[in-house]
Amino acid sequence: MLRMIWFILAFFSIVLALVPHLLWLLGWLVGKFFHYALPYAPFGWTALALVLLTWVVLAYGYFFGRWQQKTVCVEIERENIPTAFEGYRIVHISDLHLGTYDDRPEQLQRVVDSINELKPDLICFTGDLVSLSVDEAMPYTQILKSLHAKDGVMSILGNHDFFIYSFRDHPQRRQEEVERLIGYERQTLGWQLLRNEHCVIHRGADSITLIGVDNTHGAGQGFNTVDHGDLAKAMAGTKGLRILLSHDPSHWAAEVVGKTDIALTLSGHTHAAQFKILGWTPASWMFRQSAGRYDVGSQTLYVTAGIGCTVPFRVNCPSEITLITLHKSTNQ
Image (cartoon, rainbow, N blue to C red; front, side, top):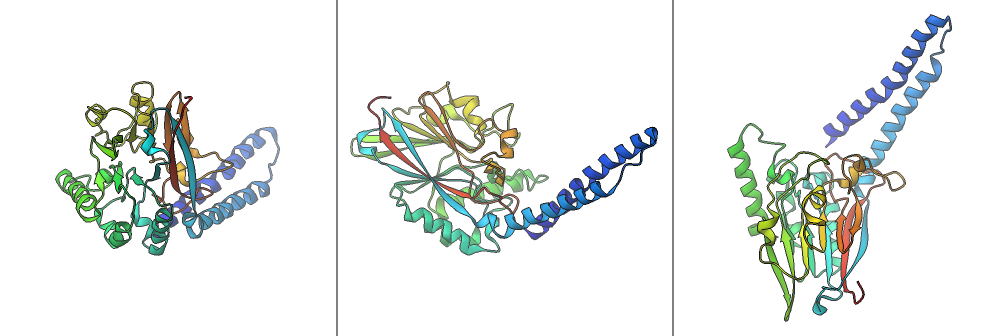
């Protein structure tokens, strides 16, 4: 973590210091042509100010910002929500990246306690449990096993869970690591990991269906990571109210909205770039649906800002626990 933050500090410091100097150099060269001496001081002070601001912002994000958390409440109203599922409470979380907590494990316990206090009927985890290795999860097994919901924890695999950023030269070793993670979630944690499959939750004669796909990205936005999802297979034979768990929100535009009648899709992946200014996030440069709720007709996508970090800071972008409550609507 500390090595990464030092690298980020050094990179941004160099880049931000170079910009005013390059502008001054350009002005100085032009000034030579017009016999005008462009003063250096304003550009030098600007470079220093930008570097200091970067250090302050990243230090805040590392020591304070990454431990902030919030709970967002979302109400979903649909005509086809079964009567027995009126008021059904789903906690949606994503992107734990458990290495985030190596220096402050008590913060993960705080997240889990906050989730349990919401008394959810179901917990949905939309991928990226770890970043580079299953070993990142081992110190937190007991904490994760203490997550509690009436209908358990449903999960899927995100891009990091396929270890495409590690074991690059050892495909067999990488596949073995994926299988280790699958076993860890299913056997050790007791989560129901959906791999291009679905699960029906019953309340008496009523039911809803949870559909889960492996990481799937949509062309034209986001990052080209890994595409192992099979939505047609996962939703085959399903009916009624269906909720899709899909890690990458670009999948929604590519294959879900307007092409299926899936009422609600839950995604993560973007982290909202772990940075927001007045509600704007740089993730919107890469993703058309980058953070929060999106509605098209009777279909909804919710993209959470995630829990953990891929780089160790968050600035004005707290870890997010999303509480989704289902309500039966009579006038859709």
